[in-house]
Picture 1 (tube, rainbow, N blue to C red):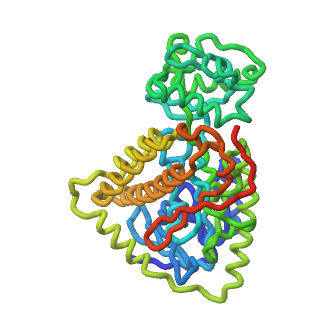
Picture 2: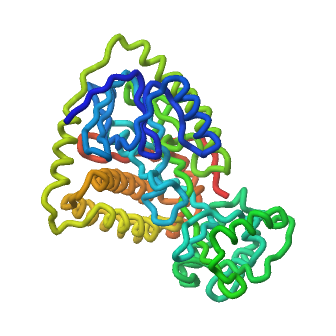
Picture 3: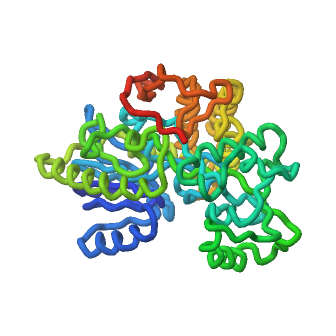
Length: 450
């Protein structure tokens, strides 16, 4: 069943909901809740459990989108004079991440399929101090809490201090360096369960940790109450935190595809090769406002809605195929888990030409397995669509990491460990026909490595 709804602006948000007739950003609860309340009071329609699968085109421009309702399986089409993507990043292509479960990169994939240019996709930021304790949820440790204890490798050496770094003092300027040092310990065999260890048996009081005592007690009570920290050390490893790369936009959030706009983490070029903490919220506020305003002006200037292409019927057919009689293929969730583990192992905070080639081989196998997958219900069909986008984005990240023969910012190549001034370039990804085209473009941006 194809349901057609007409709106001025269509928006896909990071938690899988679609909103229309306005623009708001789902990035941090301090912003999310007030913006949702304002949007609702302004008459914005918010559709829950809608998976937007593809942008529709007529000629060169985007004229809407198609998706389906995860609750009843019905295909839904949106006609739009202008469309804004605010889908966030793709942290979920990695198994170790602090990003929401819905951050699976559909915005990148849909924009790429629609002909939008993506830039800087090799620059994936890792937060160095992530809890990866088996049986517990992953979350970020404040560097002040890490400073309270001893961060050691499997040989009980405080490797960061031996390298001249303090988790608290150097965190703001050197997130990428601290992540690289931790991953080096793991890569060279001095880790424990693919992690390093945080010893909090005798918490220290330093200028960086005194203010953390209250937060530490709260974390102990809420998450670590079943652990005896006088005997047990915690497993710590970098978590994927933010994508610096994304859809290329101008100062008003417009892409190279007519009537398609974007804002927030789904965009690239705002931060460069690295990012300081807090910049992401500024990014969403500034470019969310500009993109929403520009999209509204664009919609007002368009005299009428443009008919959609055949994407709705194609999606309906694809969903019917997914729900076919179960085969010997893998389930979407299984493919997702394999992809996530592979990306951490081969295209993580430390990369080499060899690991990147291994990633390409794994991606070919995963895409082949995805072609044989099936969905037993509507929710699982949505998972299949998410995994398809995740594989596309993973391939883009891997291709860009393979192309950049240097280390810069959040991108570290063990086989090319230094910055190279010849690589003061953006890597640009674009779909041409059915092929993924990679090219470089010179930039005057300064190095941002820490």
